[in-house]
Image (cartoon, rainbow, N blue to C red; front, side, top):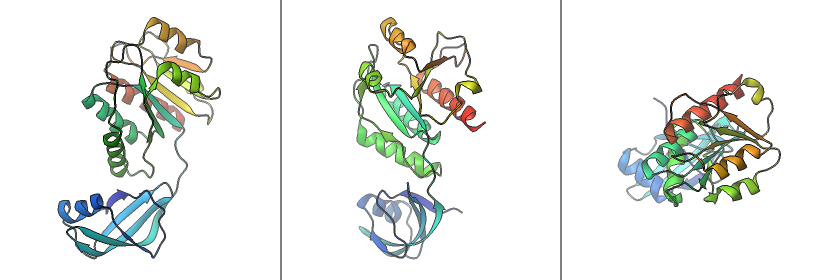
Length: 236
C-alpha cells in the first residue's frame, strides 16, 4: 500500500525534522489514526520525500524527512481560463483540471456569467487535495477573478489561446499544437459568450477555435473534454 501523500509548501531538507501544521496533525492523528514510526510522503514543486513520524500526540506531530523518492519535473505549459459557474460545478472543474495537469486556473467574469465570486481558500484546498490524489507535485495556481476584457489585455502575444467554441465546426488537430509555447484553454459560461465577446475572442490573432461535440455540453464536461484533447495532442 502506498504511503499517504501530503502537500508541503516549504523547502524540504533531508535528515531534518519539522513540526506539522494543525491541519496535517489533525489529519494523520485523528482521521488516519497513524502511529509514531509510520511513513508519510511529503511533496512540493522540488520533489517528493518519504518521512517518518517521530513525535505524535493529538494536537502535535513532528516528522523527520528521510530521502527523496521523486525529483522535480518541468511544470505544465497548459492553463485553464474558465468563466465562473455555480459552486458544485466549479468545484468539479477545479478538481478535474488539477487531475489533468494544468499549471494555472484563471476564473473569468463575462457578460453572461451569473456567478461573480469564488472562495479562494476553498478552491486552493480542492486543488491541493486533487494534486495529492493524482500523484503530481505542484498544485495549479488559482488566480484572482478577472473580467474577460482584462484577461485579453493581459494575454501575452506568444500565448496560444484554444477556444472551445460551440459554433465551430473544426476539430482540434495535431498541427494546432506544434510547439512548447504556453497554451491557454478558454471555456465560456453557460449560455455562451455574447456576440461582442465572441468577436473579441475570434479576432485575437493567437486564437484557435475548435469543436468539442455536436451536442451542447455543460461547462464541467466541456472543460474535461477540452483539456483532455489538448493534453492528448501535446503527448503525441
